[in-house]
Amino acid sequence: MRWLIAQQRADGSYEALWYRGRTAGTSVVLETLCRTVGAGHPAAVRAAAWLLRTQADDGSWGGGEDASAPGTVEDTAWALYALLAAGHDPGSRPVTSAARHLTDAQRPDGGWAGSPVNEYIRFCYRYADDVIASGLALRALARLRTATASPEGSV
Image (cartoon, rainbow, N blue to C red; front, side, top):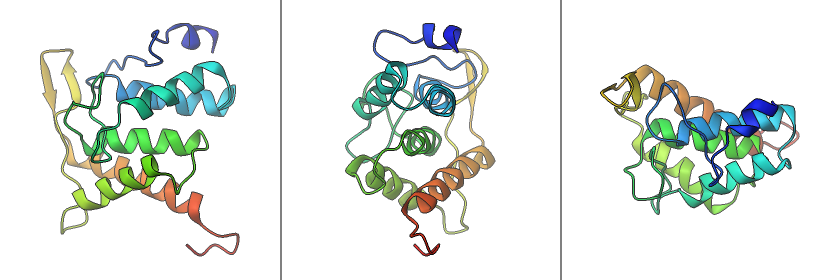
């Protein structure tokens, strides 16, 4: 964990080897930090703050360094899941707008279209994968459902 914490960039983000941009890396590391050293650890707080700063006005995240990068299902799902893992209020604007972005992006067949965020050859070739996009969206929305469920198990 010391090594991982030391890899954090000054702005609070983390690189991702297999995905474009920093949303995926920052989200996965934030989730890991929450499970190991806690959501209150300074590195986790900085990672969550970076995610919140880079959310686009439409509720999505792209892979970018700012909120101007086009949003994707994958990046939005990673960020939403990580923020919920960090204990962010499921009724807060960042969380609800991310969930709305994901549900609005769902296709009539129930899946989600992937974006070219998966790196095959770093910085040279990216590909889209609908299965990855759909799995990430379902994972994030399931986490939100669990976070908003009443003690009796109803939503």
